[in-house]
Image 1 (tube, rainbow over the protein chains, first blue to last red):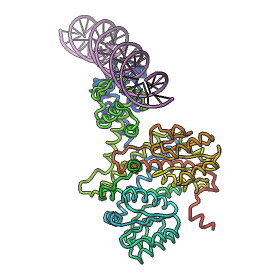
Image 2: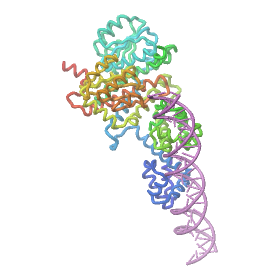
Image 3: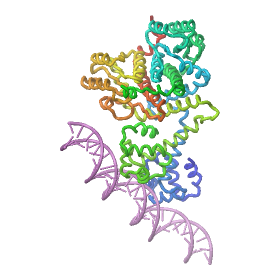
Image 4: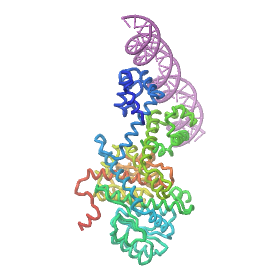
Length: 278
Length: 278
DNA sequence: CTAAGTATTGAATAATTTATTCTAAATTAG
DNA sequence: CTAATTTAGAATAAATTATTCAATACTTAG
């Protein structure tokens, strides 16, 4: 990492040729990757052996050693710069797009433990773990999340039920009791059908976990355990994606918590494992 | 940059010797700096030429090229780790869990543009953009991804069709023609039902986009445009989640690309906007 | 100012490292 | 079981890197 600084520091006590080499390397550190000692010599107008001797004088074993050190310096510098993704005009549109998406995602997910108290998450995991069955519901993008969660719970041997038809979900809900859990997912927390379910849960004393965006809303108010998925990206395209992914992320955390405490015999029923049994 | 992930992702399709090499490199990435191809061969118990061929197979020019890439990965990782909050022993298990999940996710998604050529992504976006209808299919976890994509395409006014029943999907496929697009999602790329669809697509000259894990497989071979979602986290719980999220991420990128080029009148039919119209 | 000593340079060459070729073995497909 | 393809390694070619050495320049002491 100190490589370039080291070279710069020794500039003064160098001979003419050495200095030319040093200048070239400092100016083209990022290109050195693709230069052989001979090519570097040619570029600077000197001999290959002088290049090697230059390297050794700087304390490196030889040319490849210097080259590696320079590359590392370049990488370190660019990695450090990259954390706040500034728009590189050379880079393509696509690159920028992906960069922006990933950056937003990263910063959104980071906050998830700030918004959801550790205790709440553990409570939620406990409820689900002890439940005889879990009714999951969500519409629109939240339905995707719901299915994701169902898929994972089923793999753990937990009976997770779900339907995209609101009236059937109500029918399903009637099979629940206070040993079950209802888990309702909604961005707004205002979905009428989900609120109906929530009222039913309250009435029947069924534990209710809500997963909504971060604001007080009818659904989270009714919940035994209220989880929140952050939203708020300024880009109107990206925001819905982020909300959904934040919801999924919470579900995945829940799933991983369940993995930790679930008895071994049911673990990891991957399709492949199930196939083996059949 | 994603060199190590790339290697890990290809572990499964490697021969014994290749695998030994890969394992050694993954275990000793930080030591590779000081190994020549011959030394590496000795350490692993193979021939120098096999080392070189291994490098070339992975897409590198030769051994020095791989070595440099690995060094870069090591540097990048250690630089990133220095930034990301290191594991505080006081912090709870939950915190560690979330941290690990987020870190893996972050590093996985970063590599997506390394594995998928820009041109391929644009090709895929173009095909979908011009298609009169898009048949999407995927089973298991990939079905979640498929539904996610369907949801977003429908919001753009693109007719995306999908069904979880394989035999119905085949019926649906019969409504496609060469102006349509088929988009098949599978981790393994071996799902028999999807391969059947792929053959049908080839036969009927329907453009086929595949989305599989990074390795050559029957499905990607048959595809007009093959996209890849990296896999390879060492944790058996986390890996399936990462694979799925990588697939979703690719779909989201595709969606955002489509947003850019789609005509305005159809844009962003959110449930709320649709409600307003009714 | 000169001559001896020292440092610098590059051509030639040695040594090492990397890449390719080709054959034999192994695996796979038919 | 045979043919075809793939894989591995020995031999070798090619390339890159390091050293030697002779020539030149530069320094300094006389």
